[in-house]
Image (cartoon, rainbow, N blue to C red; front, side, top):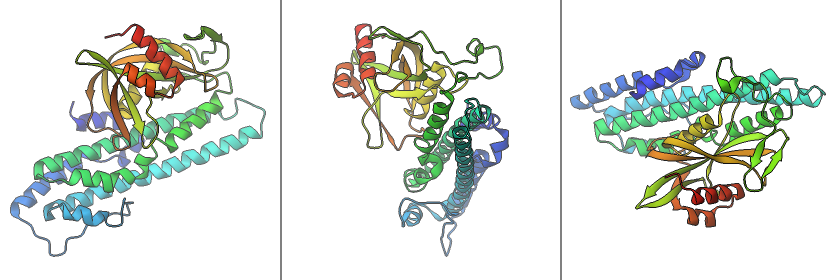
Length: 359
């Protein structure tokens, strides 16, 4: 499916937000106009670019963009800036509303002995945080794709400069792995103090037959320990491939942090496999195929956290994905990774995989 149709299908899931998504169809029309204008050989006497109030990486980011463009490209970038400004304004406003609402609920709960106070509102916040993450991801990809089309049709090199100087410093991108994730973790932490945690969506799906978080029979395969504590559920993902016959595992490094396996918090109404696939795409930029469950592991460092460990076969490494500029991917053999990893649970999972490789 072409990106425009795929984007429209996603936008329809939150129709009230549709005016704030990047208008991919309109930008393609702008691109057509760029080609026609370029063929006529336009020449602006005073060439300028309206940044529409967007933040930039450096004070001279605008000048860098103008240096790598022809006159015909300037109106296209002006339109793109306007689209990005709309996205940014909506994202910041929505994020602020969610943070304010969550702060209010936290204050009300501290003043009350009722553990169920504000639970419905918390679940609504969680749904909106997830939707906002998707909003950010889709708009970032749309911008990157339309810039790629521009470079291809005009034989320019705008995409890299625009992404570095403009796109990557917008809040809707920078908050994806920090503020939004922190919001989600705050909500989950509050919900996990009560008995009703993973309230399902309506429907007949087998996974939605119970409204209570699973609180028992989660087993630590290393120490064979069972627990009856209320648990936080996390998918731990081990992407695999064969390279010259050797089994390799992909790890990621975010910003200047330590390398780690991909982990995905299982959100309300979401299965561990769905969480895995979401984070594979959003954080690691991977298209994966067959998944296989390795087992369930109680964390030795995070209280009341159980990891659902899976291996996945990597089919393709994506070029454009939401965290492309802040995440570095690296393939290592299992023994190399075990010696480098600082995560005890991850090490236990890798040892289990080494004993019985799935591929």
